[in-house]
Length: 399
Image 1 (cartoon, helix red, strand yellow):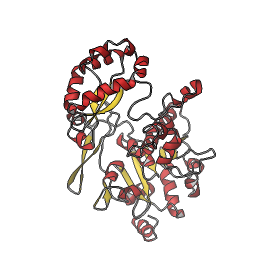
Image 2 (cartoon, rainbow, N blue to C red):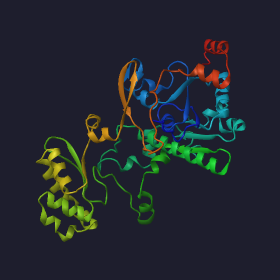
Image 3 (cartoon, helix red, strand yellow):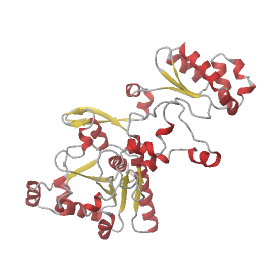
Image 4 (cartoon, rainbow, N blue to C red):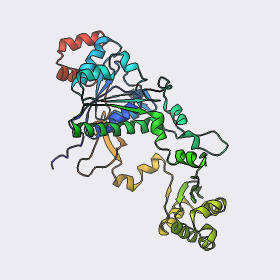
């Protein structure tokens, strides 16, 4: 069978980022066919190689975020290292970086310097607060930028400290926006035959982009959306409930007809017919009463019993899954959400990436490999460096 061509095949990306935001953007592009050359510092490479759970000196995380990338080591603080990086950018389509604004310029690798040799380059920059504005030079960690964006404010329980998910969601959302921006810029370049452009992604703005009606509600009605625990303000019922076996389910019964089916399913025909609860506005007024009914009902049944009753009644509902639950679920398997790679003879599953494209799907060709695995081949093939030159650069710590 003929192998399906990936949509970004033929696109060359030079990735200068490290840790999460920039590398996640690079992973998305690589998954869908771009050739991604990842520049890492000699020695330990990208710090994420050593983050969280580690086996044989390399994190499991790296196997996922470093997939499909060609690792090349260059010391960008040395002029020779920066110059080699600049040469690699001359025939590239995309550059991705997520350093603090000004760092790339300090190495002679800012947009003006690179685009002088390659005006068609798409230069994607990810930072905490963007490339300009009074806060642009502040350190931009995801945790801080999630708070600044307004996202953290609405997370948690009223009267308690805002909470965060146990993920660096700001980095991943920024990386997703960067990849989207890159693809739009590539499409624009192709359609108009124009020069490349800068894609400026701020972590706080990427999270701000998720804030739904928060801004117009405040502007138009003076409403500040507050944290609401496990509910969503103004939509009832939609909540999380604990079952008899200690597991949790999410129930979304906020459509008018769905609500009637839900109340009938839990044995409360009186509430199904209650005119006070016939529409969402009325149910908001009765939120505490409705939530108590559902909480009491779930508390006396195991999770699977609850879900079976609600499925039969066509009420949107589902379990709160851990990763162990995902691994044993047939739907995750049927949808191909885990991809198997091999590390030193041992099989490892890493997450598939989405979206799913019917005729030009993405895929994992190889997991994240060792630091500098492609240094010699890339510098020899792309820049024509001889074995003697490579040996000399290694001896002086440039690569």
